Amino acid sequence: MSVENKPLPIIEVVNLKKRFGRIQALKGISFSIGKGEIVGFLGPNGAGKSTTLRILSGLIPADSGEAKVCGVDLAQEEGLVRNHIGYLPENNPLPEDLRVIEYLRFRALLKGLEGSRLKERIKVVLDICDLERKISERKIGNLSKGYRQRVGIADSLLAEPRLVILDEPTIGLDPHQSAVTRKMMERLRGEVSFLLSSHILSEVEACCDRMIILSHGQIVAEGTLHDLQKRFVNKTTFQIVASSNKIDIQKKIRLIDQTCELLQDDPVEVSGKRRYNFSTDKGEHIAEKIVRTLLEENDIRISEFQIRRPDLETIFLRATKKNWEEHDFLNRTKI
Amino acid sequence: MKSYYIILRYELFSLFISPSTYVAAFYFLSLLALGFRFFIETFSNTDWLLPPLSSLIVGLLFGAPALIPFITMRCFAEERRLGTLETLFSAPVSNWILVIGKWSGCFVFFIIISALALCFPLLLLLMFPEQGGNLGFNEIENWTGSTLYLLIFGGTFTAIGVFSSSITKNQMVAGMLTFTLLTAYLSIMVFSFGNQTSDAYFTNYQKLTDGLFGTYINGLDKFGQFSVGLIDLSTILNQAALTIFFLILSTIQIERLNN
Image (spheres, rainbow over the protein chains, first blue to last red):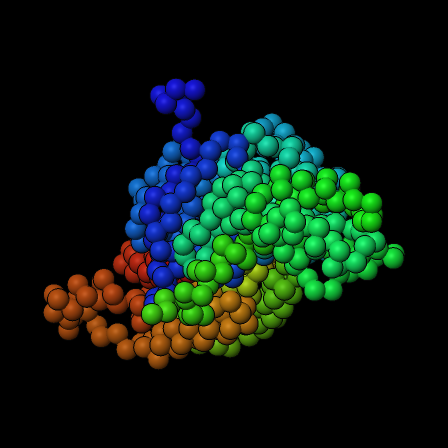
């Protein structure tokens, strides 16, 4: 695709800053999100995730920097952006006295839908969010947390937004309810861009194309899971389940790779066999070579081998650790 | 403009599905009906100079501190408590429209309650046309002036209620604040009642300031004119300005919350 034909990003943020009193919540962050992308926004509490999402939703203004959402410059037309996006705030506040259908009708009217389109969109979002007719007739105050969350997501999808911003959409949900949210995003993948913040890293790992990790108002890592794995975890970790003892295995492995280390002193015993975790600086091919060599040995019996790729939790902890060490709990930079 | 009607309808709908407003309206109308009946029965023995219809308007006005808090206390305080104000902010609606829409919803509800109260003399006129006529219930100018007076003060009172509701998350605090502010406002008007100096002693400047700001504290003095159908434009403008003032304060407060 030529540069001229490249579609405009849905979100384009350059050097965005925001201060609340003495606390600098955002220290000049820059990123962009393309059409149809699902991007996870990660970070410890107080990292500035919700502030960024609120700025991008047109709820609060930034102090400086540039932010364009769906082509709308937030500095100039902050209110206009609300026509293009769906937003699910943190904790998903909903009026408890209204029935689901009444609430969705009210929200659809506010978002400018009317007549047959209104009815059709309500029907579509109820279907996408798996809210059957019986549920839609119930009062929101009587719904479980999972159903309330679905109502919030249904609301954010009502006006066919190009971008949906979800602030902690799966917090407090059971695995089944979380799966419904994931399924909904999968269904809309490619059509709608999603920017979601979450503390549930497995959730983000499972459904996001890309991740942005924020810490103390700064972006500390950005990219696909594969990119982040390469950047933050240099060592290859692998697991061997064998019936042989620690000394024998270690001796054989050291002959192939001097840098290879056993990660724990006492291996875990699993039904008479021992589980060993090793790490090497020399990459996956050395790990494979090690296991091939061990399989050829007569005195070592290997029943399981697995290369363990670092999960998002490991990456998250490593990405935020350095930044965390540089700041105290009041977000002040340590000298 | 469309968003305004949607917010108005939503606010009105929220009031209609809230049991507390029904309870408040029932007690308010019952007490008002009893008071009105007592007044009509004893009217000939009183030295009340204004048309009997005005007694009902005075009842509605002085009963407002008990009624208005129930109508307005929810509008922003409840939204703030539940956090739904943020959801409203995320919709393409300006803060000013949000405040005006919510105030209009509360005001329409106040008008409905007032209309029900005004049914008392109408029923009396329908059932006993002769006695009703003797009491002046068939005189259109009495109705026009009194109703207009009630509407302009009702508008201000609901705006004060909406403002109180915008500054706290607690409905009870909002209700108590509305009650206090309305009682204070009515008390000032009662204490200033009859203190108005005759126009003959006024300088031109005093006449101008009285015309522009006089009814803020002398509103009850102007009621005499309204109750017989004499419309005082300065009173209407004064109350409209006061209503807009409180609505602007509410909007500023809502904008402050948003940031």
